[in-house]
Length: 496
Length: 87
Image (cartoon, rainbow over all chains, first blue to last red; front, side):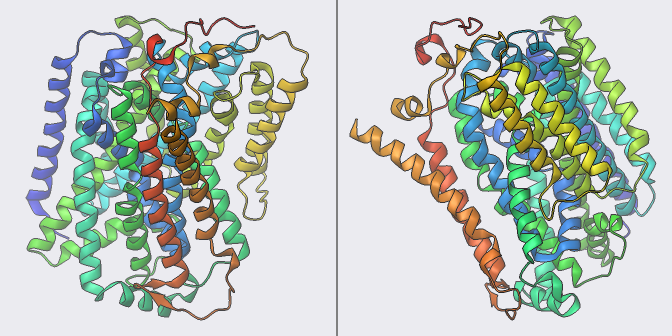
């Protein structure tokens, strides 16, 4: 593919636009408090909130990892459309209960909720344990984005920008605009990036269908080349399908950046409308990237699992090789993909800063100093992650699974605790430790449980310890009465 | 009151249907040796899963429209208790 000088010029113009947005966002800020920097002063309305939720949820994983997984697994990866929807279903358990508390008590991070919810001697260790898991998961997520940025920059520019150069250069741009503009810059750029992503994917998919002569022809060609990709899945794959729905549905709602967007919404109505609209986005994003990955099976052979993550860049390469309009269209998709990746990376970075300073180190101030500390810590994490991004032995999908297997261990502290007042900090802490050690131990030893994810099994163990320990434990932790402060589901429905 | 009960019932029905659709979307009940049949350009079991997910999206959007997300002011929640207080 030859974008020539126009590829570089377009990329520079795009990055310059991000810098301008960061400056505008900086001027729009009200003060230097953490709430203003990390939550945009809680002013996000329906449109921007929806697009920032969308651009954050659909990332480099969606654009490179999911087509790669669909290329490897075939049509059974249609499960991805289901699990992306399951996330919005599971938010029903979280949002109506957490949002009123968040506004009333001015939460900035998930740890602020834990501090309010749990008392007794185990409350602080619990907050730190949850923050530790979330930081690990976010660092992993950031790593996946950095790898994706390097891939896109390198393959699509035909090596003019080398993989390492793409990782380091684009990370520097993200660091700049996130530090300058905070959540406002992130949300505004997310809005533009979300639109670019949808348009780019639709164009790429349209080209693939046009080339192949329709979806039916794609399926027939895939069946001929690799029959297993269209065959009815085995029992093990079906178990894995269900396990993935549970893993992704439960763990993804606990992304700190997703929780922080619940805090950052202007009002409850904006939040509810955004989630209603988000229900449909897997159909125009996840489904499309899955079909792109499957369609690629008929076009080329990739033997190495890791290399399958380059399915989209290779397709763009093919598309752009024809020259003319194809080159320009491929260039636009390239920018859409890059923007999707960068929008997720910036959200990770923003959340990492606040999590590290407030939840892990316990610096809970609400002034400019606390904000500055968060920015510095985020920068340190970003720099520390770059060397790992240069190591390329894990597929993007495996990185996603590992991250989710950690995050799902936080389920009792949020999803159970918000609905059951007798849950205590001590048993929840014990459950997290046991569930995490169980999952990590089995993963490191290469133990598999049929199609079941070890993280899901660990979460079941973890939840059992938390619930049984709270029911029969002898600790002196008091029961939480704050649950009376949030409306029950029945009350929520009645108010309408 | 009847309207509220109806909304509550509808919300529960949506969530229950979503759960059923998820179970049905996975082809665990299909014979693995069945020959390839194409519906709407997709293998039939993929088309069924996709149909289920479209229905999940519609039901989930309806369910969100039935729930009010409060902004947590004391007047709205009707709560005066300090949540830090424990019994």
